[in-house]
Length: 229
Image (cartoon, rainbow, N blue to C red; front, side, top):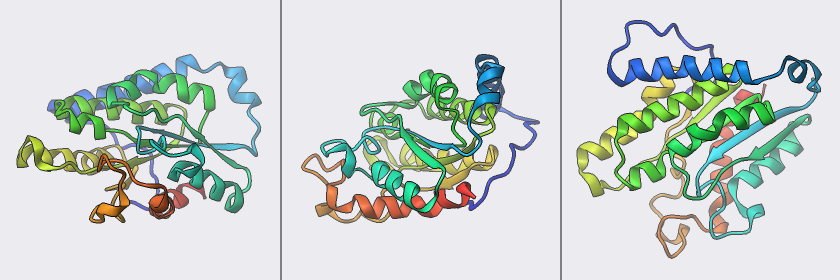
């Protein structure tokens, strides 16, 4: 897991999905730059910085009160430990990477985040969607964040072997591949602290219960905190 953040590498000699993703990253960055009025950039208060979280039901506190979710708990810690920072949760239950890619430009232009947490892909994997499509969508989101100069924390997931070992393996590898190619910070597996504990999940076996949300907050915070310096 990368603890810091560096500017994107030069996107040269790309092939396959990597080439498509690289071009989409540049295109997304250009869209954001075109969408942001100069006056907005100049008048944003220098002391106010935003962490924007774009995720699915795991980040939207599905089945819980919104205040119980790991994102809200992270916002509380942020306000306490990092004065001048705030958190905006733009997560939507059921969201796929395509949905995130479709609305990312609007979200980053609206909130002007300094850090974007991208926690999408779970629903793609559960539906067995093509991995090239998922990677391309996530690359577009990274490009939109980089387009306004934001740092990115990419949050990975793992899938049960419903669609075969090869799909499961490639799904998991997608996140570190993207993080390495586009120089983002990486949390390899959101549910790492609780994944082996059946009691940590609601009856649907997919969504964590309220009692383990602080553990998820602490897990994410280890990767997020270095980006707030």
